[in-house]
Length: 294
Ligand SMILES: C[S@@+](CC[C@H](N)C(=O)[O-])C[C@H]1O[C@@H](n2cnc3c(N)ncnc32)[C@H](O)[C@@H]1O
Image (cartoon, rainbow, N blue to C red; front, side, top):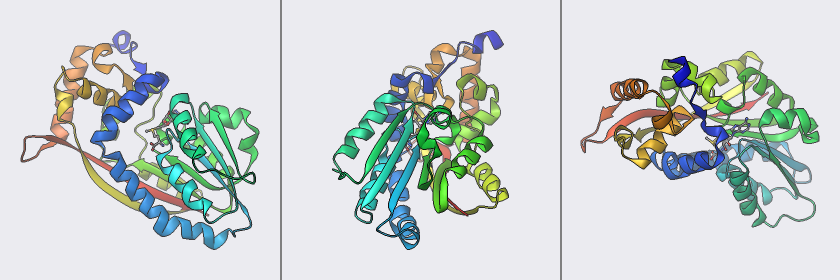
């Protein structure tokens, strides 16, 4: 089995497949726009006030986005902060150049004036920390929206991000919780973490507990939802195979994993899912927003 699983390729290293899988399959099932909308509402109702109460209009407001992808949330943060701050410094980090370019294109429409600046770092967070002078800056707001699974050892990452937080700054982390299909899958198949370079076992509970152990306050908001994973069980479905890739973080999982492993996984997913009144198979999924401050 170990020789067979060595064929498994990390999805995050196949940028084209990642983008395709994320936007054309996972995004739809996860109703990511609905989840993003909840985070946006939280930002508008709570986080923005927390920032503006502490940091005045005359200050430069700096944001560091980690694993921004196409930046759906960071774009909203920038857009609303633009009307509260005369000067903004935005730093976005992501190894996927195509997704980062899309974010860059959206930010260009905000027409920031000369007092503001945007910096785009194409590479993993570890490289940003090791090589970029911008990693020496302190940020008012740090965001990591579903990206901590990919940045290596979580405690190291958290410590690095916390070092880059300004005094009274905030960190917003969005992360799945323990009941999620993906966390359950990575707990069942622990070797997936190494072969896909993604620590999908990480849950909001791990993040919260570690942040609190380091003396940070953590506010938690649960976003409950479910995923319709019916197509995953149809091996002829291109959509289902893309979902399978996202849930395992492996590129072309159905073609590269041993058949008995795929069968086992299908049985496991059925066992933790339920069937709704329309015969659709629905898996558990929940996200949490964590607002972290000192
Ligand atoms: C699930 S996506 C989330 C994207 C975006 N934040 C969103 O909510 O739409 C995870 C993102 O993490 C990025 N990523 C993967 N490895 C990374 C690393 N080592 N450092 C930073 N980001 C990484 C991926 O390229 C991808 O854009």
